[in-house]
Image 1 (cartoon, helix red, strand yellow):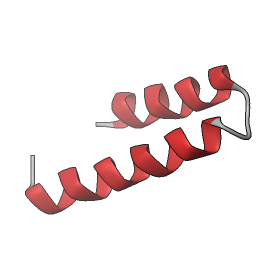
Image 2 (image 1 turned 90 degrees about the horizontal axis):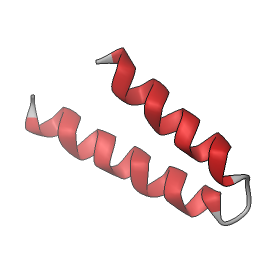
Image 3 (image 1 turned 90 degrees about the vertical axis):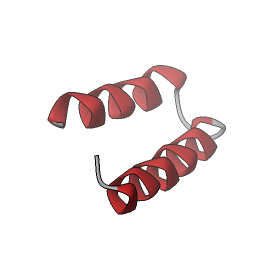
Length: 39
């Protein structure tokens, strides 16, 4: 995995985790699952 991609993905996950505070937990989990499945 490219380091730039890994950093980008890490930032996306961090942002999604912050959104969990305002959105349903399961929706956040689904977004992470979709992201990981795409690879």
